[in-house]
Amino acid sequence: MATDTKSEPKITYTRPWLYPLQEESLFNDSRYAVVEASTKSGKTVVCILWLAEQAFSGKAGQNYWWIAPIYAQAKIAYRRMKKALPEQLYRSNEGELTITLWNGTVIWFKGSTDPDALYGEDVYAAVVDEASRVKEESWHALRSTLTYTKGPVRFIGNVKGKKNWFYRMARRAEAHERGYHYTKITWRDAVEAKVLDMEEIEAARRDLPDLVFRELYEAEAADDISNPFGIEHIRNCISPLSSQRPRVFGWDLAKHVDWTVGVGLDSNHYVSEFRRFQRPWQETMDAIRGSTNRCPALVDATGVGDPILEGLQKTGQGKYEGYNFSSRSKQQLMEGLAVAIQQGQVHFPDNEIVSELESFEYEYTKTGVRYSAPSGLHDDCVMALALAVHHAKAKPVSTGGIRQMPRAV
Image 1: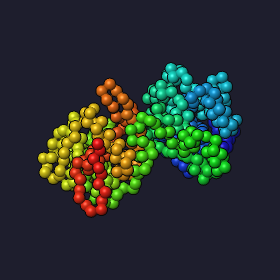
Image 2: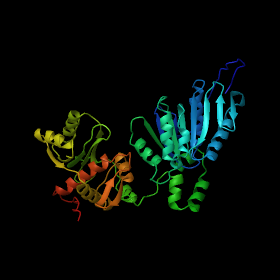
Image 3: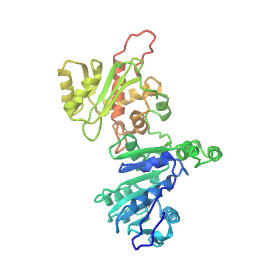
Image 4: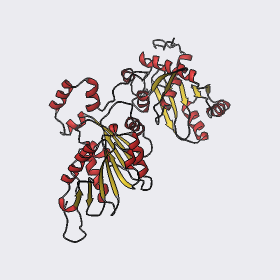
């Protein structure tokens, strides 16, 4: 940075070097950027730069926040930003942990142990540091401060299990929800960029339990016993999209909040067609007909799905059957999918299908087993895949040399 001696200085700023993935993770046009990252991969420094640049372009009196799990961690970021900025361009307040820049913008560094203390201000941009350890109520409070300003937020952190709001938000970002950007940074990216040393990685691998190492350095949430399919089983079924023609389709229907998803399986039960979209109902029916052609298709006929199924059947251009979801029928459908995945009888690409499968949960209730996506996440891909698998079992083919999927008991 350089400044002149006038009362209103002109600032020349050159962004310090960042490795490509590090820069791409935050410096993008999305309102919410979510970064699941290896420890010591440079995620904090890039957030300091991003928040400073947001404040550089602000106006006097505007507030910019750094939120950490506890006050002591916020203080670490405060000191690092002070060290990064030329002293003549700001004044600091140690008591309030604020940095007031030459242009009058104020950067605040706050702990999140008391969510109620975060309400009230108008915030123009924010960083949530170590988000997997920040209270969800603190994110709710921060979100309220962004209502008027529509300010952007950058969420960074190590992975810490699946039972937290940051994990759920990361899955929404990974599924390309509007306004979200997702990045995963592992130790491999940091070693390649010479931010971490390979010898230190190997030492950490020796010193730490496997699950801890995977979370801290691989940015992979530890397997959760509440997943009905099994994380390793899911990964063993990952395969590129098949080039063969689909033999059956499964369609899960939605319009606005959720997604309409179609999954086509070929004769070997590899996913060969994958469609995911949000459209008005007439366009949805047109898209289903165009993708399915004359393949047998099992369609979600629950609620609003019933007239859609009826409309598809009236055209006479396909073989559409309906499936009504109830607690019992959904349980049977999920158990059939679990058998297929655990026995390696179905294969799918590494896209939204895998993301949804890995976050899927089950719990025991008084009425049986309840299968669902975590609150705020989607299960449309899981449902469409399960419908396709169920339909494939119901419509076996006789083709020499092709292993057929046995029926689940």
